[in-house]
Image (cartoon, rainbow, N blue to C red; front, side, top):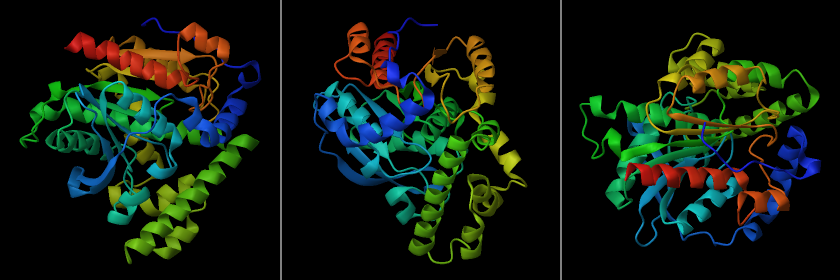
Length: 355
């Protein structure tokens, strides 16, 4: 376990639900005023992911960039509204990283470009690798660091798994496994079946699940309208929960006979012990999205792999980690975004060790 600055949230946010809700509402309004550096001028472009799927990206390359961060967001949304990811982009660019942010499969402008649905990492891992290759061709410097949070953290871990298999590929992408530095993830989804079952057991969890399900339904209609004939409208109407969305629209095209089998295959917990590149996992014990019973399994998986640094905190909620003024002083941070500051500090340490 590496040493890291302790997390010290405000007293009124020492609760996972409170932290999650407050940060989402407050951060979406005020995030730009909390950081010292403005957003970079992103070049908006389309790069090619796995299976030829077009991926919409924001790319920014600072002068004398030293390496590249590739990142995406959680289960729903699009780049324009993903303020938490954009905080990372601003901070990383100011520290000399080229930044590639992308709408992952079936999200945002990528959904307008292709009817291909999500696979929760099974194919998005290759997307990360191919985006690294494509951005290298654009002038983004090696090494590449795969970053994400929530479901995007799950995808980034799959990206690292795919990167480990680069050297065994017959295709020359212009990069090798050694060009991928590692991965850093915040509150990653690690076991979909257990966490979804947990989420619908309590009132606020059911509210969260229903809200996500509504957004997934809207996403399905967006794809349906942009790509006529790609999705069955009756199936969209039946998809009134996250589970039903996957049941009605996702698993058949991926070749799974059940949602359970799909979740089992796509959950990263199973391959954490086998990751052979540096990995940072920031995870809160009070995350209201995930079953707390996953934590012992996460600790065991990380304990058996020296390549993983696990920052397991008592507080933090789900992609919250808003720090108190006292906590900022303790961590020597210039802003309240404790988790992103740990991610960038960790990547910098790893980068120097690998140079």
